Length: 413
Image: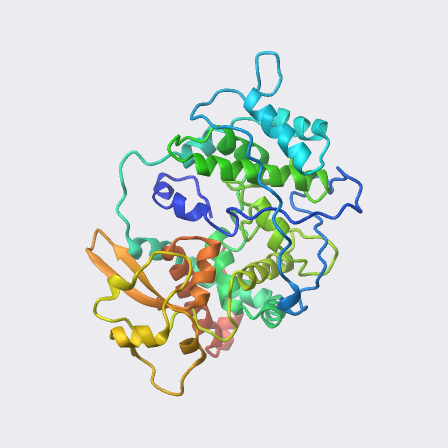
């Protein structure tokens, strides 16, 4: 999801509000000896779940959030996390003490990790606000993700993992095309998962956030750091070795520590969750995340509707659909695929605006609850629409009857 290029600064605020953004870790089981880490080199490890992937979704509600850590402050500088005497900075020490008390973690364990955290100048630079405003372009954004390489490699990923995708779709009701599209957009099917040490990235953004006007962002990253330390203490991952994006997102689906703890799934049923090494776990985790954020099986991402002429007045920009079909119809919306009343007409709906400032155009669509489930993975309307469009193209190509030549053509790498 996160590449080291300047153009990303135009979309970083949207990219950060993902599956990985703010969830807190589950109430972790205490039947494991603390600080028993996975094997060296493994960054995302065992998170036992109470339910198997094929359990009914009614039984899959995520655990309650743990209380947030309020202590700690941030400053826009590259100042060390340590004092001249080699101790934690007073603000970081306060964070450590509150975290230890809140989550019953020995203070020495918390301190030992924080003492090893190092400021990452690249993470801070990539998170810094752009000096000039970059105009939003839906066409440009879409073109970065709905493009030949992701389409070609997405078909290959689908074919190679057809059984895993079918199981996740049967278990959670999320189509294979959507799961493949998200993994394609996030990491190009696991090719780009990030090489930042997560401990350093989260400490940098939690205590040295480069934009002092956004204290809430630093607070969010401090709590993701708290989640990382909690998971490390319980032996669920190794915080010293975990790698990911410059914002701390990990694995094929780019889950932040809190999302990993609350929404990830053990797709291969081996008793642990590995979002880097297990494609089954990554696929099941994407599906579980979406279902727990409101995905409705059998409903399209966009309703087959032509929006009303005054569509902009109905745009809220939020993450929750608020309109009924009768309200949209009264405002002038019309169905573009007439027939028997489909399931989407009974769902809450929302008008989506896809703005292209350089071209001075706006494309309007009508999103169903499934569109808004995608915005919980990433708050950007551009992101959710690109995932939907890539999924649609993958679905179209996968359902077309392949020729023998196509089946025997190797995929270039």
